[in-house]
Length: 357
Image 1 (cartoon, rainbow, N blue to C red):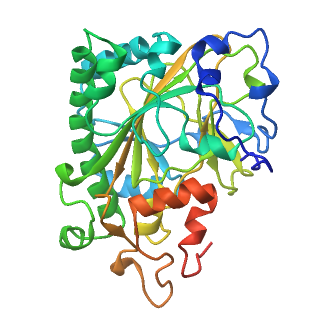
Image 2: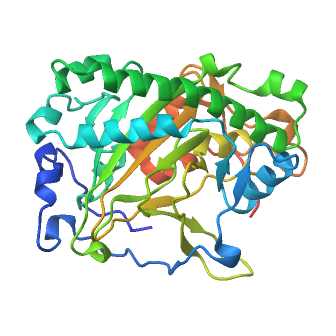
């Protein structure tokens, strides 16, 4: 990933990130990134094809285990989310980002806020601006929607709330399938899982807009990072851009692998809290978003985590004489605070044992 600068951004005017400011003939220095080619980028073919898993597959548990251990990411079909909902959600996202900059800024995040229009939290660690705009929803979207559309805000709220409800159930189902794939029994999961049911889950929806870019090799839509959550479910439109960093193995050196958009699928990323919960058996995946020279890319991230006050530590059954607990227990809220201070060094800050390579 690009190295962190000596002088990261701070208090950057949000107006610089409005889509109207992306209408350049070339990439301005403010958005020009270096070190984007720190590792080769490969096409998603052969051994570099991200696993595609049908959730109705009788061998589901084994396939999830293999994908999590070898990749930290997989795509899913057979998830039960209706294509019509995704179509309606995509339409509302386009509607949101087509609003004027002044209108979107009425919902700008204040310091410490989670919800609203603004920069991704990792922006402050970098000296360059990213070629994207984002809108975060944690809880009800009503308050912000009423500022965006004085009258016709209910259609946005209805779709977002329907999506949130469906994705909580899917996220909870996937969380339990992933825990089963670690070799835990249903009884083990009842005792050890920090999320009792989908109503118990903490979650956030992240809407992302990546406008066309005249020179996509000089900038980035979203810098390389891992997610803090248990897992993230990502929906992307038909425009490619997501890349994951695959470790060096028998098929090649460390490399960026493109995750192609497949209609009616979600991409599932393993996050830092699953890295902790699994005691490093399932590692969080480094990923980034690139931009397109001609097409507008949008994506929706659904972040699944525990209740904010529940501590997450390595599951006892996954520790033993050969590998004790690698990390101390931490709440999602505490870990997010560490991430805001330390970025990619946050996991190191809660380590108490040694990882096995």
